[in-house]
Image (cartoon, rainbow, N blue to C red):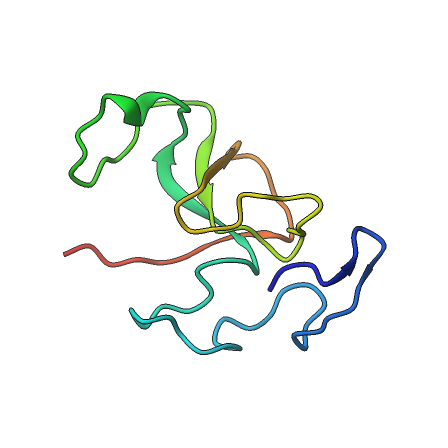
Length: 112
């Protein structure tokens, strides 16, 4: 679910997939969630700010009320140890809402 091989020249697909894989291609984590890291960056509803969370409410913070970029999380198949060090669930990255790439997607989520 991340780049396997000589980045960016050849993805060997050691996990069975060069590029993205189907959502349930690998077992879920302990919470029953699939593909939480790697495969594709996931768009989040929150606007991105590198400093907002320093002073925000710590109980399920939702991000700033406006911004120019949305939060993305999780990393993608284009992440490789020589190129990308933020492919983990807790890492927050960003991209503008008008961006479109093969390594970015979204996850539908249900609120309580």
